[in-house]
Length: 104
Image (cartoon, helix red, strand yellow):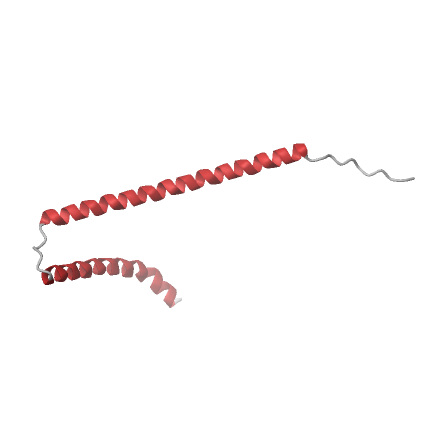
């Protein structure tokens, strides 16, 4: 019970903190690599360009996923329609069995 309550209350917080911490650590590592290879320091325009490219890439990926889910739903609807049509044609083409005659 205590473990469940702990996970319920602190799991979202833990994920948020870990994501923010990962971004900070990644930026610091990138900055150290840049300093080691003696590249010029980041300009605000470079950071803005990178963030805009990342935003558009994320939007493109989200759009592709939404389109894929839409296609999957449409294919499932078509599959259901095909099953219904198959059942209707099977009923029409199935031979009708007459009731068995009893011997006297």
